[in-house]
Image 1 (cartoon, one colour):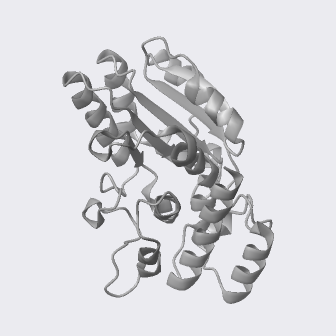
Image 2 (cartoon, helix red, strand yellow):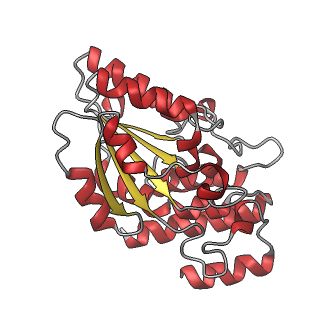
Image 3 (cartoon, one colour):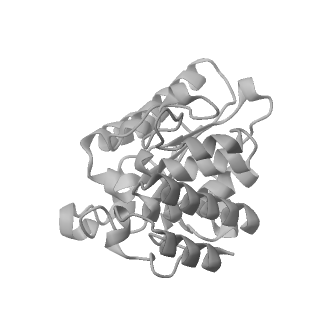
Length: 258
């Protein structure tokens, strides 16, 4: 799985460099989470009956594109079209691009609500399909997230697992400086969720949390991560929410990732 993560990170750097696009720090933050899901957890065969994965923090779309290509779902040559004139892959997720992108998203909290709706539908159909959603910590400042948090336990959605990518650094500062949501675990517990914690860069820790019994409740995994993880000069640096990858950055980043 380490090689899966490394491949995702390399593709993130290449797409960010070739497109001149932002959000590379946010994408690197969730690379290990996506590698764990696509490398070991999601049931994708048969495709028509697959588990659903939604990246609600859709500004980190390049991490999902890279994971889909590494998993063999998206043709790797599509990655070169990211944010290019006439290209197929936009900066925020568009379901019409197909190839494993399950929903269009961009506004914070949007993908979370869509995922809960899908989980509700599967429940009504008595389908064994599961829904996994990655949200950013900044999304926990959105009212729509808490509306969904109320809805899911009420409907008994034990088929949904949310992973909170808690890198503690959003676009303009620390969440505590913008609009603090701590203590976060007691809030989710009070809404009726099963809460567990994980190291978001440790595949074993993530798998342990994914397999923890939720006792009939929807589950949220609060995964501690580092923005820009894997590239020393990007790690935990606010500027890399929007900063552009230059040729020099690219060379140094790829050398560190290996």
